[in-house]
Structure formats: structure tokens, C-alpha cells
Length: 374
Ligand code: FDP
Image (cartoon, rainbow, N blue to C red; front, side, top):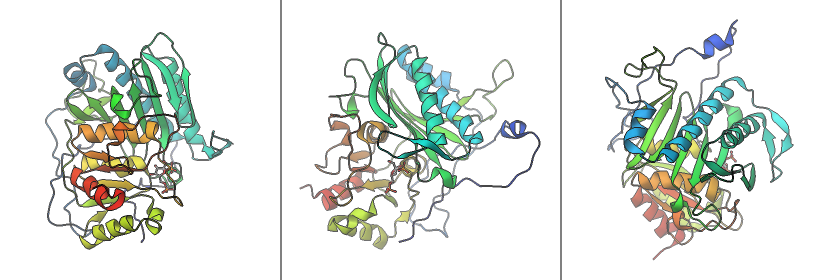
């Protein structure tokens, strides 16, 4: 099957004298609102186009945090992480994607952009007023930075190493645990919040707040976000209390290699095709799961077999996304017992896991067909 990616950035050859002036040009957009589940699907239809209309005004980050996140320490760490995502956004606009000449702990070649994003995250954690420990997917060791502080932060600085050179959407995933649990021995459910940033034509970040999942968009200038000094709020709230519906018609099938060994996965893929689900898969975990929050539906599957072992990381990838999806009303599966991936104990920083995540009834279907949960 040929996998198509619809999450691409336009690549244009440009000649201009002042690149920074060009890059700082304000970007206008209308944030999307939920798309309802329609009966019509397919490339020729418009059933998955956004129906979002422009609002009269938008709340900025501070307004939402004041209302939805009363804990001042949590507000601080969320703002610090959003600042880091803003810095990564700016860096991605100006850095070419090249091989760095170094490799990470696993011997994978590191890319220029991986190193830049990781350094930004480490600097943010070192300078933090509330972060105690940090651990990066690039070098999975928990390092204590500020012993008297509160949080343990785990991040994948730039997920999508195999597609970032294509100029496709990539992202940062961040899980945050309290001092009372730390990371080792904790579960994803112990996270105090998690954030996932998507770097596409726009930068948008999903954040778990007290009553659900919110999306913030970076660098937009819609009316209502002009501050008293005439500047614009760097982050506006583009979606509130996002929900993922129980059913879906969008599938993102990762690790299809495993279908050679798992008859249940082959049958599941056949089911999606027979029932005319729409394929939306780029090969980057962040865009492939993030779409569930813009389309309000979807299922991402990544089962594993002996010949195609687990690749996704529990602490850096599955746990942060798991918390966001479950808080939005979706479901997760650990791909083995059929239980929530948020209940799997983190025994090692680099622990891998199979995963199914998204619309609840589709995760159940995965459990029935692939995990064979009775
Ligand atoms: P990448 O290696 O490009 O960084 O976990 C990493 C990841 O991408 C995920 O983003 C993605 O879902 C998965 O690997 C895809 O792996 P395969 O293409 O090897 O199936």
C-alpha cells in the first residue's frame, strides 16, 4: 500500500535580501473547530475540511492558565515549556537539516535540528524555577539539574527524524512528573501534565489543564490578542476542552511490518479498507496522533511482533500522548494486555512499548483483534 502524507510544508525556492524580515512577517489564520463525523469520506469529498469560523476574540495563554490551572508551580512549568517550543519553532525556520557527525546513545545518527532542539530543552530545564530533573530521548538518563525543585521532565526534543528532511511536520513531546513519584517506578497516569508541540505551517501545542485539553497557537495575531502595549500575545488559545469521539473513520497504521507476523493486525487493516476508512499517516508520531485533536476522531496503531519489535518510548512518547488522549475522552492500549498505557510501570527511562491510541471504540477493536483480549 502506498502511504500518502498530507501534512507537508510547501518548499519554495526564494531569493530575498532580508530573510529575518520575511520570517517575522505575521501569519493570520483561523483556528480549526471540531469536525463532526460525517457519512462521506475520501479524497474527493470535503468531509474532513475544517468547519472553523473566525472568532471575535481569542483568550491568551495567561487568561486560560489563570482560569484553568490554579497551581502556580504548574503554571510556571507550562510557560517554561511553551517558551522552549517557541524557541524550537524559530530554530527550525532557520536551520538546515544535516547530519551532525555525532550519534546518540543508541548509535542513531543525530541531525542538526535534533541537537538544536535538545539543547533548547536542556537550557530551559537548567534555567527553570521549578524543574528538578530532566531526561531526553536523545540520551535517556535522568539528570538532576536543580535538586530543590519539584518536577521531573522527560522529552523527545524533535520526533520525526526520518521525515524532518522531507520538510514534513514534526514535534516535541513532554511528560512532567511530580517529585513525589519521580520517573522510575511511576506510571504515565502520575504525570501532572503533558504537552505535545506540532511544528507544521503553524506551531500548535496541546496541553493538559485541570478540566481537559487545550491547544495554544504560537505567533498568530488575530484581533483580541493585542496587548495594551500594542504587541500581540505570543500564544493564543485556539481550541478549548478538546474531545475525541468514540468512533472514527480515520486510521494511522504504524509498523505495518508487524502485519506479516500478526494475522489479527492484517485483518484489522483489511477492516479499515473494507469499511472505507480514510488513511492519514505520515510516519511521524506527532502529526499522526495530533490529528485526533483537530478532527476529533482517529486511531493510531503500533503493534509489535518478534520480527518487528517495539520502537515507541513509554516515557517520552506514549505517556505524554496517552494523558492527552485519555483526558480528551479517547482510550489507549498497551498493545499487550489491552490495558491503558498510562498504567504501565516505567521501569527504565528508555522502556519501549506497543501502542494503540485514539477513539475509544477503535482501541477496543484493536484490543479484540490484535491483543485478543477476551
Ligand atoms: P522517527 O524514527 O522518524 O523519529 O519513534 C520515532 C518514530 O519516528 C515515530 O515518530 C514514528 O511513529 C515511528 O518512529 C515510525 O517508525 P517506522 O517508520 O520505523 O515504522
